[in-house]
Image 1 (cartoon, rainbow, N blue to C red):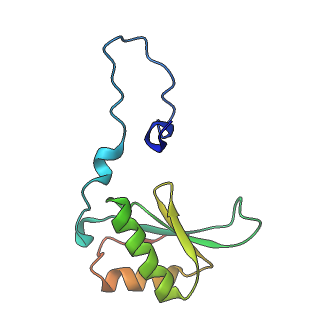
Image 2 (cartoon, rainbow, N blue to C red; image 1 turned 180 degrees about the vertical axis):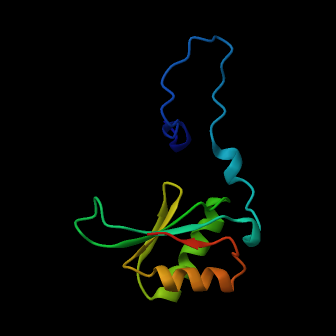
Image 3 (spheres, rainbow, N blue to C red; image 1 turned 30 degrees about the vertical axis):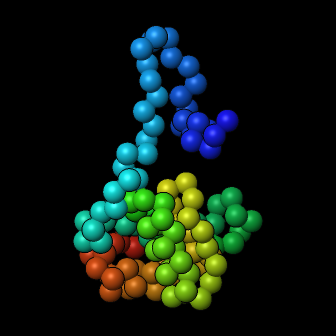
Length: 114
C-alpha cells in the first residue's frame, strides 16, 4: 500500500460505484505568495510531556516549500523542529522570533496567538 493511500482522512468506504477518491492534495501543489499566506503562530504544551512547541499553522503550499520554511525557521531560532500534519513545529517558545522573521520575509498576514 502506498503512502498516498494511507492519507484518506476518514474516507473508509463508499457505496457509489462511480466514486473515485480525489484526495486533498490539490491545495498542496501550488504555494501561495508570502503576502497571501495567513499564518497563525501559537504555543502548544498539550500532549508533549509538558514541553513547549511553537506551531505555525495555515501554510498553503507544497511539502518541499513547507520543509524549506521549516529549515529556515529552525536555523533562525537555533533549535529543532519539524513539518508534519499541515503544521510547522519549532521546539520551545519562539513566537516573537518566528513572527518577526516571517514578517521580514514578506508574510504580512502573520499573527501571534495565545
